Image 1 (cartoon, rainbow, N blue to C red):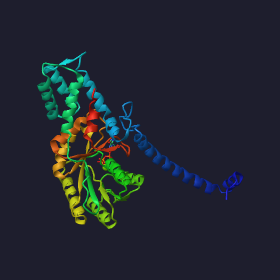
Image 2: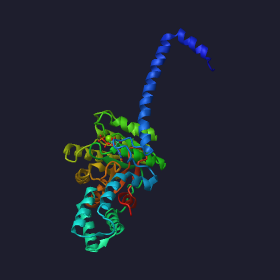
Image 3: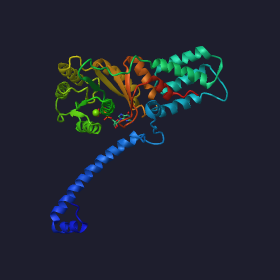
Image 4: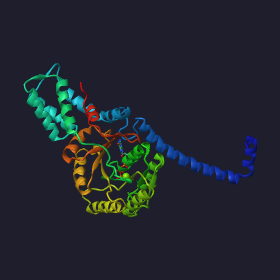
Length: 368
Ligand SMILES: Nc1nc2c(ncn2[C@@H]2O[C@H](COP(=O)(O)OP(=O)(O)OP(=O)(O)O)[C@@H](O)[C@H]2O)c(=O)[nH]1
Ligand SMILES: [Mg+2]
C-alpha cells in the first residue's frame, strides 16, 4: 500500500523515538554505503583509465583494449626513452662514434633495461654502423629487434592441473601488488566461466582479509578466511580441502608480504606448500612472484632471492604504469629465466594483461 505524505508526517510526529532511531540507522547505512561507493568509484575511475593512484594526471594511460592496454601503461617509460633517444639526433643523420654510443647506452640504462642488453645493443649498433651517418629509424629498428629477442619466452600460460583444481600460490615482498593481482586474476578466470576460490592467507596484516573479501564480493567468487593472527597454514589447509571437496576449478592463495631474507617467513611458505600438497598432490601448480616494476633494481634482487627460496614458477610484474622505468622486465627475464605471466597496468580490476613481447616493445619505443 502506498502511504500518502500526510500520513507519513503524522506517523513521524506521533512516534518521535522510532523516527529518530530509523533516522540514525539510515544515517549509518548511508555512511557505510558512501564509504563503499567511494571505494568503488575510486576503482572504477581507474578502470576507465582515470588513474586514482598517486601518479594520476595528464600522463594517466588511456585504456585501449588488450594490446593498447600494455602500450598505454608504458606511456611514462615510452615518453622518457623516446625523448632521450631522439635528443641524440641533430638535424639530418647522426654520426655513429664513441660519444654517440656512450650517450645511447646511458639512455637505455635509464629505462632500466639492464647493462647486459643495453651493452649488446650498443655493440651491435657500433658494429653495424660505426663511422656512418644513420637515420633515427635505422637505429630504433635495431634496438626494437634486440629488445624483442631479449623478451622472448616459451609461454605465458598459467600451469594448469591435469585434473581437479589448479592451485596458485602468490608471494612477494610487502606492497608489491599481490592482493590486487589476485583480484584481477580471479576476475579473469571467473569471466572465462571458471569457479574460483580465494584463500586469504595473509593473516598478518589487519586489513588484508577485508581487502581480499571486497575483491571476492566484487567478482562474485568464494573465499576462505581466518582471523588475524591465525596460522596461514590453516587457511591453506581449508582452502585446498574446500577446492577439492567442492570441485572448484581454480584456488588462489594470498600470502603476507615478506623479504626473501626472513628465513622464518620463508619456512612458513614451505609449510604452506606442504599443506596444500596433502590435498592436491601436484600442487601448487603455479607459484607466482609479484614484483613491483617501480622498484627498479630492487625488483631484480627480489626476483633473485624469491625464485630460489620459494620455488617460483612465474612472475607477475605489477605497476608497469607507475614509473618511467618499465624496461626492468628485460633484465628480469634475462637473468632469471622465469616466465613473466601477467603485467599489472593500473589499480582497476581490468588493468591486467598476459605478458606479450610485441606489445611491450611497441610500448617501450616508437618505430619512428
Ligand atoms: N598503478 C598501479 N597500482 C597497483 C598495481 N597493482 C597494485 N597496485 C597498488 O599497489 C598498492 C599495493 O597493492 P596490494 O595489492 O595491496 O599489495 P600487496 O602486495 O598485497 O601488499 P601487502 O599485502 O601489504 O604485502 C595498492 O595501492 C594497489 O592499488 C598496478 O598494476 N598499477
Ligand atoms: Mg596483500
